[in-house]
Length: 265
Image 1 (cartoon, rainbow, N blue to C red):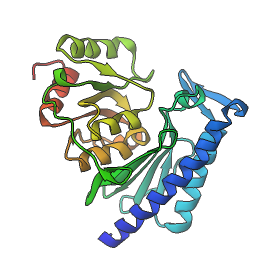
Image 2: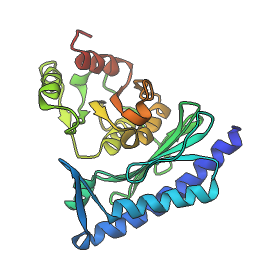
Image 3: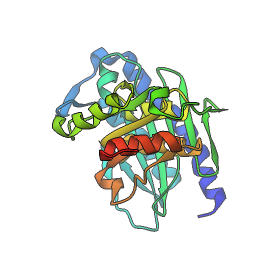
């Protein structure tokens, strides 16, 4: 795949994610009339999730029919290793969305050759669009982001993700280690959006024991473009099975990795 092809997809996705966000925002502003269903404990969906994903999927299929697609609501299309694949969460943070909170977003990422090429996360209720990737700078609303100056978890706030996919007895020891070692935590119901706060220098780091690829790849691309470190999320079939995610600058990453693995940094 040529650089021109990647840039064409990147530019297309920047427009597409805004259009998808506008559709999702229209549902958000009329959320009292939404039909909401449960997919499991603390896992909700509505026609807003599905219709936003269909808008993204159909436009990508029309413009890039050679690419595969993986969306939270409609699943993964036929996919071979030589293909590029779009990884999409139409509304990350559905629980905040239906609760009237602004902490939800649309996330789009593009993977080619088992490498995360670029990603973008749009929070329309906050008018914030994060974007970045290989060869694309990390930006917030088109302007470069600034890293957090902290060199330790004690010098800033860490995003901490959790979902019922992980048992409390698995999560709580790690959480306790974070607090015991002087860290402070932040969570707002969207992994993608919280990860983008690391890229933008609002948070010093992020850790989550298990997260789905569509919930984080868009943001991971922005974090890496900002010059920060993450684990190899796509390892061991992370695309399909999910993985832990750890993010921060070199020093903070080392601390969070040690906390996650229950060892000294």
